[in-house]
Length: 460
Ligand code: ARG
Image 1: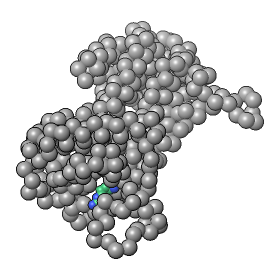
Image 2: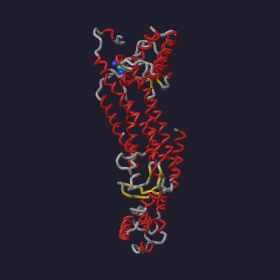
Image 3: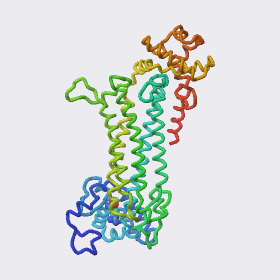
Image 4: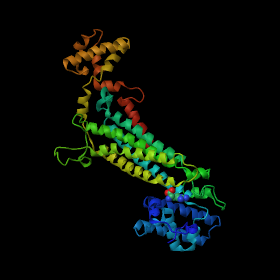
C-alpha cells in the first residue's frame, strides 16, 4: 500500500529505507497516548464544526477498536507504515473509510509525536513519584525500629562518630524525597499541551487548543509552536531525574554490598534476593545491589545520548529527534524495576545490630566527645582538648582498647583535671544522643525526622 505521504513520489520506498527510517518497532510503546491524543483532537474538530458528529463518532469507535486490536495482539504491524502515528491512521481508514482521512486535519506528526511522548513522560513522572513514596515509607519503617541501633558513621570510609541506623536510613529518605520533588517539578513545568501546533507554524484551521489541553489533562496549551515541536526538554528532564535517582540508588547499593560482606556483616540480604555461585558452594552474592549499582551506566548514557542528539539542531523538527525515545524507554524500564526491587531488598534484609555495635566499639568513635567534655566541663580551649584527647587515643591503642573502654583511672593519668563524669561522655549511645542539634543523629532528632517524612508522605 502506498505511503500516506507518497503523493509527490514517483518511485516507492526501498526496503532498506523502511528499516532505517522507521520508528514503529519502538514507538508502538506510545499507542495508548497516540489514541488518546487522536480522540481529543477528533472531539475538538467536531466541536469546531470541522468534523460532523457522525464522523467524530466513527473516528472514536475506530480508534477504540484499534486499541483493542493492539492489546489483543491482532493488530498487524507493518514497518512500511514508518511510525505509530501512521500505522494507526492507516488502520483507522481501513476500518471507517473516508472519515479516517479527515482526522489529520490541523495536525502534523510533529505535534502528534511531541504530544504522545510528553503524555508518556508525564505518566512516568507520576509513577516514579508513587514508587519513591513506597520506598521512603520503607526507610521510615526501618528507622522507627532502629533509632538506638548504633553503627560507626564514616567519613573517608573510616570510622568517625557513632550514629544510629535510623539516621543513616533517613539520609536516603532525604535523597529520594528530593528525587520526588524533581519528578513533581518536571511534571508541573511540562504540563502544557503541544497538540494543535501542527508542523511548526500553527494552523489556519479554526481549532481550540485550550479545549484539547484540558481534555488531555494539561494545564494549558504551550505558548510557542515553533519551540513546542522542537522541544525535548521534558524527555531530558526525566532522563536527568532518573540518572540522579539511580545515582542515589547506587550509593545505597554500594553500602548494602559492603555491609553484607564478611568484613562488615551489618546486614544479611534475604535468600529471596541473593544469588549463589556456580562453582563455590558457600557463596551468597549480592547480585541485586551490584546490578542496581551497574544500571547507572545505561541511565547516564541515555541522558548524554539525548543531550547530544539535541545539540545544535536548527528549529524546528528534525528527524534526529526520532532518536529521543529508545533511551527514555530504556531508562524508565530499568529504573522502575530498580526502585521496586531495592524496596524489597530493604524490607526483607536482616539488620545485625550486634555487629554494628561491635564495629562502633572500634576506631575510637567517641574521641570527639572526650574533647567536647574537656571544653564544656573543664574549660580547656578546643585545640588543647584535641591534643589531650590524642594522648588518650594513643593510650587506648597502646592498651589494645577502644577509647570508650578506658577506665576512669587511665583517663585521669592523662590529665588530672578529668572527672569521673567523663565516662558518660565516652559511652556510645550517650555520644550519639548528645548530638541533638537540629537534623542530628540523636534519638530525639531522629524522631522529628521520622515525623517530617511521615508528614511529607501524607501530603506528597
Ligand atoms: N516518527 C517520528 C518521530 O518519532 C514522528 C515525527 C515525524 N515527523 C516528520 N516530519 N517526519 O520523531
